[in-house]
Length: 601
Image 1 (cartoon, rainbow, N blue to C red):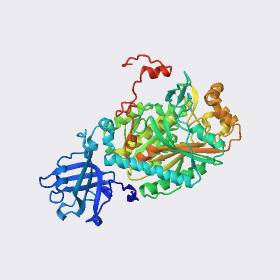
Image 2: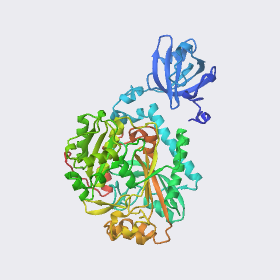
Image 3: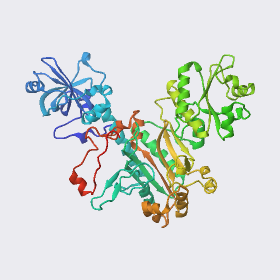
Image 4: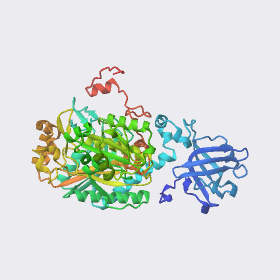
């Protein structure tokens, strides 16, 4: 992917290690990098020299360069050096086909040691076997590995392609504030005390949402930002307290204008970063279809195992769990798996436990034998009519396995969605080399928070309700759909966006439904509400998780693999030992006093 090697030529270096080839034979070169493996065969010393582009073998032969050979006796792993010499073809029996430069080597006649190195805490070639905490503590060593070099350069190519595409489509890049205002909604803010304004605090942005919208109010039409965002929340493999989003906003647009733009952006990124062509438009599912068929609002559609609704088969059932579910506006859903012999009784018991842990009352399983008879603890309670309906309706075959949940719609779907994913992995049904993009849209505008007994925005409170369902706002808010859309890649939410509310009356109405105190709202983001009263255009946007995108395109398991200096799952940087205490003088300047806390609490 290095297009211009000339750009890397310096006073010390004529070429990059990994770009040399047989056509360079007899060429004089000056190379710089770090010492990898060193092998002393007495008369000859062999050294693998590494820079970001790759590895080349150096040969120190006293008959070719006596002083260089003598100096090479002192070099060790990770010394930073310069080597000058002549490229020679390797003999046939010494060719190394495992590296691109394996058919040549450099005979060195001049060696300069820029700097020595302590013995590294781990071998760079054995990265996969090294504990992650050790790699994070010595991140400056870990970043030298080929894996980390490749990961961060992949992410850089995504950023480069993004900027090129968006700027060629009329977007301008605008920076928004890092020091902003704290709002009580959403995740916890990271707070920054103000020295110049005692007892006042800034908040680091969870997203540039309000500023993006204000830029639309201000007539910029199309803006984007590779935005640094901060959220003080519990971490997972794909979460960090600070991360980067590809944020963009557009004016005078509908949903289809935004989704079409993102499809073309992603197609361009895939082509320029991975040299891979993908088809657009992407598949689309409503939120209800995604939940009903796949049990997730970010479904992995790389495999076809779908959830089936079998409520109608049991509408007259005497089985209590079915009857109770249907009488309470619930559903009966199932997965039909091809071969029950792939699952032991222990597997089935674990499925039942998973269902209970995720909110369902339980799970019923049925194995279908060679004669289409049902083998199950519940089989004797099913009527012949119900059994026939299952056999014909689901086209059951011998050895099929049914997993059945009867519960509220979201509970039944979510639990079967979790089991669907687990089964797909176990049975190797997922095409790992496939990039499967999908839109999920028509999300509910609200969800009910049972604990706090109030409505909550499923996305955020600035999302426009759909014209078709806005009439339910006063009568039945849970029936209102939003003009919002999530982009999914291989079962991961890559990003989400919406068309925004663009008039103050509707915005106030939504805030009231969310039980937001309007005086408090004016205190927290009155600048935004005020700006809405000055000719706000129809507008919308989206944010894509840059780090997560890089992780998925690189086939990686953790977002930490594409961040140069990440935090652990306890939000701690083990290299810099951050966060850390500060001096009493600093606290005094900020008018802050720290209380002693019990470490065990």
